[in-house]
Structure formats: structure tokens, C-alpha cells
View (cartoon, rainbow, N blue to C red):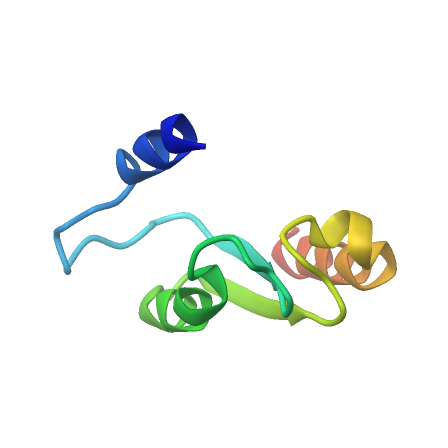
Length: 83
């Protein structure tokens, strides 16, 4: 677990002006207990102009397994919008 956290921190940017240029979809389970992801997901999404965000109901960290219908619907709709 510690190795995973160390690798994740390498992806973080301290530059507040840094933005992801490509459009992206961010999904988070409403019952995700992995660190503080539920707390930071929405503010992160709000700070990214190219982000589409959804909180997945009745889902933990593996929201695609916990609520595949909702996850698949969001992915399908997102892909239809950008292509």
C-alpha cells in the first residue's frame, strides 16, 4: 500500500496553474474509503475546465464493479459527447 501511495504522489502537481489539456471523465464512488478521494474529487473536477465529473451512487473505490450500470452509462454518454 505504501508503494502505491508513493507512486500516486509522483502524479501530483504543485503548480496551481497546471491544468489537464485533454478532456477527461472523472468518476468517484460515493462510498469510496480510499484515502480522502471523496473529499477531493469534486474540488479537483471543479478546478479543471476539461473535466466531466460524476459521483457514482452505491459504489466504493471499484465503482465499475459496484455499480456497473451507472458507470457504463456515464462512460457511454461521455464518449458520445466528445466523439
